[in-house]
Length: 227
Image 1 (cartoon, rainbow, N blue to C red):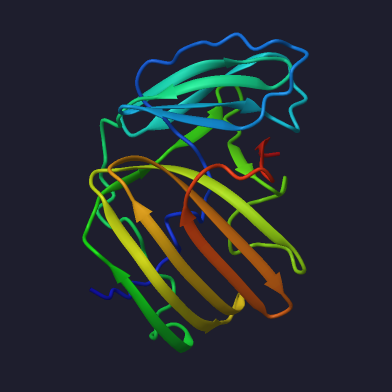
Image 2 (cartoon, rainbow, N blue to C red; image 1 turned 90 degrees about the horizontal axis):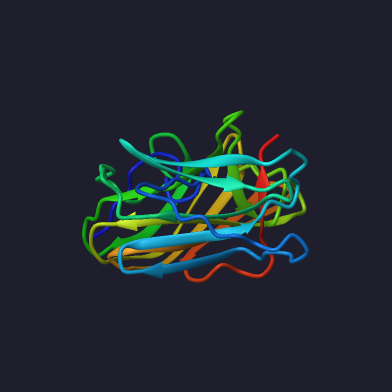
């Protein structure tokens, strides 16, 4: 079934993480760099890593997910490990919102197929003391996938919980006032439970290309705290 619904792409416009349930504290040696890692075990998702631009004393992080949350320490070196259990609230009934809309954009072409509806929730991770968000990206100054600096390619990673399996496949394009010509491609094989969404955006003059796929954390990303 084809769907064209206007809106920003909820699967990756804002890259924030959240979690729910009880957290597990993991002691990480100070002299070892911790690469970004995610492990799914049953309905639990464990995230660990080291914030590359961390310049604060030891604090704590909180993962929000609707009415529940989890907390975990973050060291003076920016190292952390936190566990998200199955979300208590999975209320986003539109898992994906296609960006291009003929009522607002010109030269719209869309061929996106969604196999079936599925509800989802995006994790949102923040520093407890100052409420600054954490994001997993190849670019420290990342804000959302549409605001890629000209001449750059940026990779962004988000973590989603889905209530059931689905697929989102296809491409779309349109001419916009704010972003120039936008081309998007979707190759998403969604499984029930936790999924890792990798978005890649490339900006060239008046053209923006965005691709989304489910997979593993790529090697070119790090955790950053928003400034």
